[in-house]
Image (spheres, rainbow, N blue to C red):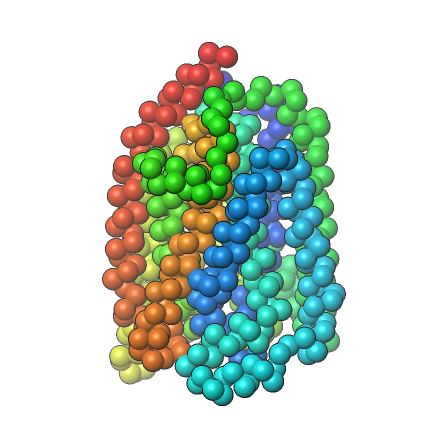
Length: 492
């Protein structure tokens, strides 16, 4: 339906018809809860790993390269097999309940008994034989409880946000609706992210004199309640909204296995370009975040202070991203088109990332008197600014343009191709960054990621270049595919 039926301001801020509210409002609330949980997960997983005993930010590349990626591949294989046997609703409920079960198990069974379950003696023995340069590897084994939590938290975004939520949105909306709805969903997610900081800071201060365990357990109960709210919204949507909504009818292709799906992606220029976008984002953001988190840990060494700072940055991301998505995202996509909007993330991440790594490199090669302020303070807060801006453009431009690119595809390509790209592709990008960082640390004989900053700059610039090339190649095909998709839908 044309936007001409709306007033000027409603077209910009609320382009939704009254009869569409039964579908749009549950999705908005669902995205709010999913993003709030994600924000808490982000803060908790980084705090547990970076401030753990014998741990640090250098452990993150090990986890993402050698733990999270294999698990993500296994989860993708399992998901694609289950998708062939069960309905989307069954997968939705099963996935959310699995996360709820683990959250409660971690908070009330594993973490309270950490002292008895930590292999302290064996990890010390291993460390004494292989040397301190490999401390970040041993920390993964020593802190295996935190490692398991980190893996589950890392899987929330690709599984719940991208595969479940956006997969549902892509199934029940056409491109014209996506242009009107998706910016609203992004705003709802940003609004949920804003609540991350106050929620974490509240419980951290409440139990500051009692113990971090009570903070974890309180946050876990909140997360479980929010997850149950997501299940209720999905049930309401399925029961009262979607049966009355005309779903897109797409030509179905024979079902593919995961390996066949990956081969299909490799042979399809369209899906290959989407995969390149996802891999590039993961590689660039992780290449910048690890040195930043290592610097944050130097400035805020205690668990409570580190988590409070990360939570405040997360809330700031929500504020800025909400403003950007509400006033700019949807309007920019509608006015300037898909290609212009998709180019914004690589330009922003590339430019701010180069400046951040340059600051870290200057700190290592110049005396503190060269800077007008404390160089560590400068790096931490400019890194926070870079993190806020990068995630803002991700939520406001990268996510909606990427999801829009899936819409013209048939349902089989959406399910199989999206699973491989969102889960394996996103993890491959971050894992590739981890492999690069670990290789340079091994080459330089160091256990500090801050000492290899100069070697990371060429990889960042090269990745951003290929990211932009992929967007240029994808834009023409997307325009053709989306035009065919809208023409087929209008003829129903």
